[in-house]
Amino acid sequence: MSITNAFISSRSGLAATAAWSEVTSNNIANADRADYVRRSILLTSGPTGSGVQVEGLRREVDGALDRMHRQEMSRTATQDAVADGLKVHAALLGEPGDPLSLQGRISALQSRLDELSNDPAQPGLQRAALDAAASVASTLNTTSGRLSETAANTREGIASDVVTLNRLLSETAEINRQIALREPGTRDAAALEDTLAAKLDEMSQIVDLRVQRQPDGGIVIYTAGGTPLLEGRDVNAVTFSAADGRLFAGDAEITPGVSGARGFEDGRLAGRIALLNDVLPRMQTQLDEAARMLVESFTTADTTLAPGQPGLFTDAGAAFDPLAAAGLAARITINEAVRGPGGDTLWRMRDGIGATAPGPQSDSTRIEAMIASFSTVYTLSPEAGLGAQGRLSDFVPTMIADQKVSHSSAQNRAESLRAGAQVLETARLGFQGVNVDDELQQLVAIEQSYGANAIMMRTLGEMVDTLLAAF
Image (cartoon, rainbow, N blue to C red):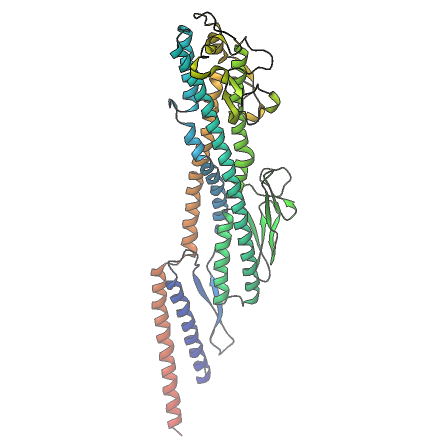
């Protein structure tokens, strides 16, 4: 090797060492940043005599790990959305044996009616039975109101998620534009890739995504079902119709759970849509069915009622209309005919709502009919999801168990999925995160490389000086 070639080789070695040192120092400086991906330097051998050349930087990423981790984040977010949405409602339902729960109120009503049937003349027992019935109606009103609040909060959450998703898509479109202007393998390009990865992580918690790389370094984003959300710099904005709970990307429907829609099934948005369109309507139907069974059973038990006259339980004061069953749990009330001023019509708890005057004080016929009505078999709405037929005495505990299971199941699935996501996150960080000890070892190697090249440069200088001195 000539002195010139040796000099060029050593000089390129020093330049490569300087670049290597910069990359390693930058890794150490950013070791605590969660969105930072470790860089390594790319070196190649140049033509004969030209030494080593720096080709650029490489971000140490594993595309398969990224994809799997984002999928698990989406799946976890789905269940978290359902569990969080139902948390307050599940608490309101109470626990078995809780006297303030709907089941506790129903049991108390049965007990008060049993006591009244044994001594139907007692105004105190009549008042106790009426108060127990009023508590059942009030608890149904409160529970239904909580479901309505949950639905309203869910709509607000969906609208917020849509705004966030569209913002992230717009920001990603701008990153695509900037990446296309940067030279691949540069420090600026790597920083943009870090930002892009962070945006995808955030979006994956909202929507299950599919990502494709473009020749210019940018990305195209699709829903898991294949509907484009971002193509280069063009955003296909997502919109939400609160009136019918549907989602669109541009003109394409992407509502989770809709047959034929090329949407997605995971992510916080999917969980909230399922809650709004499926879970909450089913729970509301169940509550309405419980209210309907109360209204109809106590109306049927009262033989004093004229056609169209409401019984003890009413639909906002009126008789029940089977065609207007939706929302009945929010409207069910006690008939004012039994609440007379000063309690002077409490006898209607014994003699019937349609009675015009007190009857025999020992007559418990209608009270026993009300007690028996708890065991009457009713045809259930299929939308309630609790079978074709049921009795009030069995339906309410079954309904409460079903609704609490919806919450606990989502909670348990979320915890299980979160454990899997954490395993993948650990593997991902282990691959692309910065290990400071490893980087410090790199600095030792850099120091040794620099020393070797410096010695070579000094030796070459001495050789040149010797040659010049010979002339």
